[in-house]
Length: 197
Length: 187
Image 1 (cartoon, chains in turn green, blue):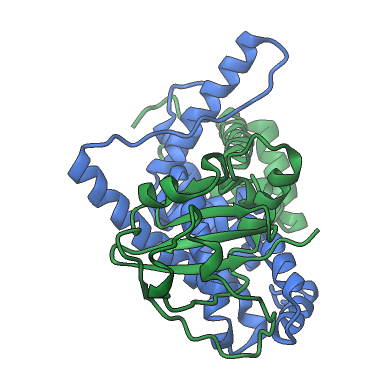
Image 2 (cartoon, chains in turn cyan, yellow):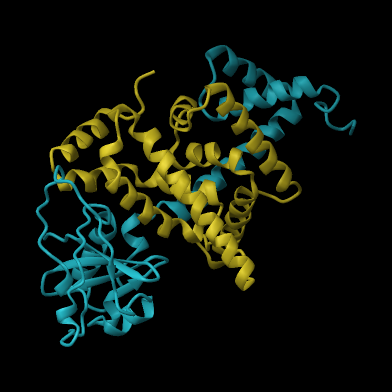
């Protein structure tokens, strides 16, 4: 043990002081504990070093964590678009509303021959918005459109889709909705996400 | 202690049950930051937080009817977030094994008064973030909730379903580990 550290020979005492300092930094001290910490800081270099060190770590951690984690969820799935703030706003709502409702519709084989460049719109139905209504997820065969790349090619505007691990989002300018297509290897589940002005 | 799921959450949950869709949006906005914190602290990987959070909110909506006690909303959401994060972390681990990808560090953007200072700050924050990522999840979780959301020990304990003393001990140890891992480096 280093003789230069006045705490080292008293591990139990060091732990008690460490706990006091952490409680002090976290604003969890009782008035008596706070007084004890202040007195300790006056007389102990090691205590001051510990407080300074923990305070610096706390400050850095707050900034670092906020930088990484505080962006709104909307930004996480921002639709890449050159169409300006309106679509950006749609993208914002998209992610926030990603869990709003799930309506899944069976694949209509009759559409196959006349599949539009956008495979999305025909597969969606109106939102009733009725939360109390039971939702029965249903998987549909996607006929080879399961990969993000396939959806990308068929999406009407290549710059208004976004792919994350398990989904593709597509903004439909006609219905002014953002759709999230939840991708599975063999199946596709469509999830309309509402965008309201 | 008053319930952690505050009045606002309770109102929103009631509104969601009544079919109010915008209440769900508000509920997400109100809780998304700490959910992101849980996902990050479980996986230690900021790059998968966005994806996992999407899944968490989708699952939360799908399973909303299974929320039996509204005052347990945060604990319920915490479990969903943690499970999704564990699954995603395992998938990411498998992908790293398959493709030999390296763990990437998130770029922490800082605005400093000068480019040099900004760089120094950025580097400092990156080191601290790396050290946080290297903490065992056990300690990282309360540390992140404390520093991201400024939650009290009691709030963290209620969400993580742990005794307050345990939370306090983990916070002390987390800081000690960070201090040791950053030992000698000016923070």
